[in-house]
Length: 243
Image (cartoon, rainbow, N blue to C red; front, side, top):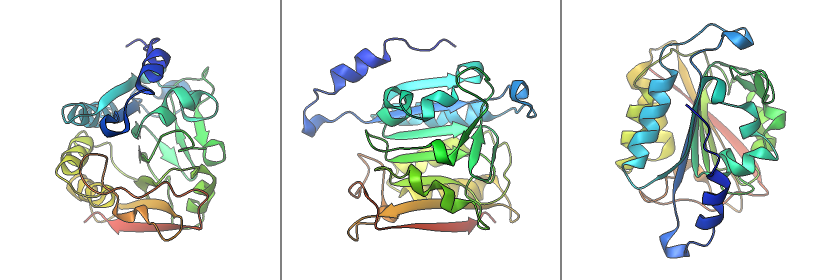
């Protein structure tokens, strides 16, 4: 897979879209070949992300990027490069390894192997929802508060409180429920129920501004969406047993 060098032009053109016909965008990055960064390789990260991407594209979303393995770059998720990639989409999925306050990549040169929570500033351009299908990114014990600075207009982060499995079908379950009109929180917890067991806890974190809470957000085109919660009045976190 090669990276799409015409993306900045696409963004310029779509910026002139009339409000009533606003383009809805999705992007995904996934890593199966993880060993350049010292992690075990995985088998299903492409399936979970690409199925999610294709279902949303089939239901009215414009695909902005679908980058895998060495083409999935940490720099796409942080300033200033995220303005052309992650923060140019409405919803994004990342699928690889994760840990407390971080998630991983398989490329050491753009810029490195991990995105730390302190490097994330999302939503100041477009991004509403990010799905981090990575272990333990939103842990209950101490780590979830480290993502507060990521909410620069971002509505929700959906990920895991605990470890999780390398499911091939989670992205499909998630996307199908989103386009059926389920909320992002409902759809994520359902997808985790279908692909995990009682030892796994999914989690979601969000921000609230002026009482407008994205907990009940749907994705664009399939239900109500809250306004951008920036600057946040407060943040919240919830988890769900995947039994």
